[in-house]
Length: 273
Image (cartoon, rainbow, N blue to C red; front, top):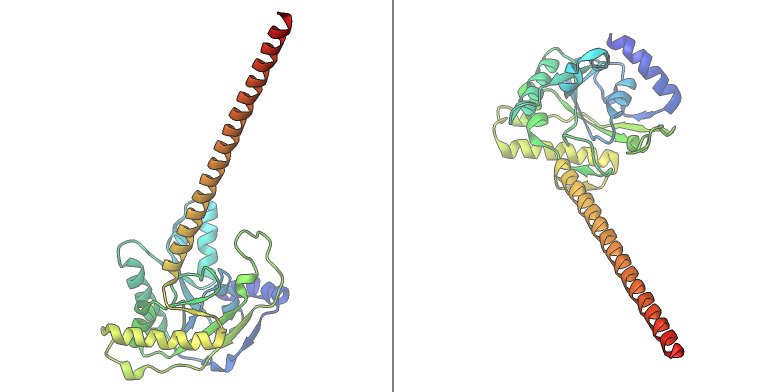
């Protein structure tokens, strides 16, 4: 099914967008490896597998696989077909543990496992701090090499709010495999997990040319959402002030007109006398 979906989706993607790729020689012809990529767009999980001969397995939230109805079944079939694995995000640590388990299983089969260390898409095109749990723990548990990957310009194809994608050439840069065997057996040391993740993110930054932000993308999204909410509330308050000013101006104008009418009536009374 993966092969069929790759032809059905990958073929048109190549023809329409003509993606370029550098560093294909860094992908091993066989054996397990972790592809650690920046995350700019929903389409990242399609463009990267399209340009590789080998199957790449990513993880996706379980809701994509459990939605009822015909649409839900088609969605589930689509995600399974493109090599996505469902991850149950319930529970405080559900998503992280499920992702780690899924990644280990994929690598133990000698396959390629794709992961986004940032944990979510970048909200503004910058590169954010990698989360140390999933990537580092999977790498240390399996001993698989970590291959840094940079997606280029995929966020420009279909920016937020745009329905029709823009036909342009996105790119992919694949770095040399990173060996972390020196940390073997230290998967429970949080300083080691942090150091390994930071090293991978540094390589991704060099490949992508992105500005690096030393905070998590999820926190940045919260800040952006809060700022947008505050701006909306400020705009609403400003409009309310404008309405209040307009109403006061109308009241003043009405009072002035009433005075003018009163003066006119008084003048008429004076003349009649």
